[in-house]
Every structure is written in structure tokens, then in C-alpha cells.
Image (cartoon, rainbow, N blue to C red; front, side):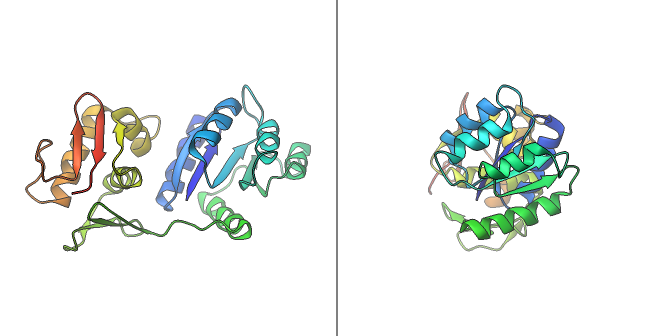
Length: 228
């Protein structure tokens, strides 16, 4: 299940994205209203978590525009439960609202409730692609029915992103953002993470040019998970 988080507070956006990924969701982020609409069209998310106070285009306008075209579930973030804007948001078609500050656990519970009401099917904890089986609830991977291998949260997040886009080339910058958020990662750290992940998937196969590895290095661009 893919969630679009629209929040202009970068620190809060990072916390939300991290918490939702740990809960097993795929997350994309936008920091203003115009970018939110562009990502909504490009990514086709299953649900939006939408702040009301956004630059360029406020959350109410985003909510109204999306609801005029689709029934994508929308959860509003607001600093006040009685805010007139929240009432308008619900009138415009938002499905629920969460009052700041809130716990990630509370938000995940609201997402599950809204998803059930909207008939959205949540992604299972198991991903199976390219001979790999990733258990996202346990951070474990099997390669071609081998023994399960424990992954670190960063390794699991990297592998999940590659598996969700099997056969596609993902740029290093896109992977860094997906794994570490907007701050904290770089290409050297990504290269080291790929090295460790390869060695766990296929012991002894940690070299980027080894043709047996399902994780392929695309020189100067990024990485791709290929069917082997």
C-alpha cells in the first residue's frame, strides 16, 4: 500500500515517512500543495496524509481538487481539532483528521481504519520477486527458498524499494531518499549498504559486477533488481 505524505515541516515529514515504512507501507513525500498534486497524479497512491497549512497551495485546495477527480482516502493533519479548516476539509471529502501532536501508532491505526472503510487492501508483509522472499514484519529475506537471513532496517528498506520496482533502474539519489529520508545518506553509504545486502542475499557474492547477483549496478546511475 502506497501512502503520499504531504507535510511542509521537513522534520515531521521524515518522522512520518520513517514510521510508516517501518509499519510496512511504501511512502512518497511532498512538501507543498502543487508538488502533492503532481505526485498524486504520477504515483497514484492508495491514501494521502495531508497537512492543511502548505505553501504554494493549501491543503484544503489539494483535498478539493483530488476529491473532484477520485475517491483516494485522505487523512488531514491539523493543529486544532475544532479548526474551521478541518470542518471544511471533511466537507470537501476528507475521510478523517488527526490532531497534532500525535503518535505514529495513532496515525497508523487511523490509516488502517480509513483503509478498511474505503475498501483499500493493505499490502501483505511478504514480498516475493526475482527469487527473493522478503518478510517485512521480521526484516528477513530468503533467496530461492534458502534459509532466512536477518536484515538490518536499512537493508530491508533498500531491498523492499528494489523489489517494489523490479526490472527498473532506480537512481542513487532516489534510493538514498527512500532509505535515509531527506537527510543522512550519501552515495558512499549506499554503496556500502548494497555491498552488505548482496553478501547476505548470496554469501560470497558481494561484487557489483558478479553476474549472479540479482542486484545490478548501473554505472553512473544507480541500481536495479533483475530477475535471475
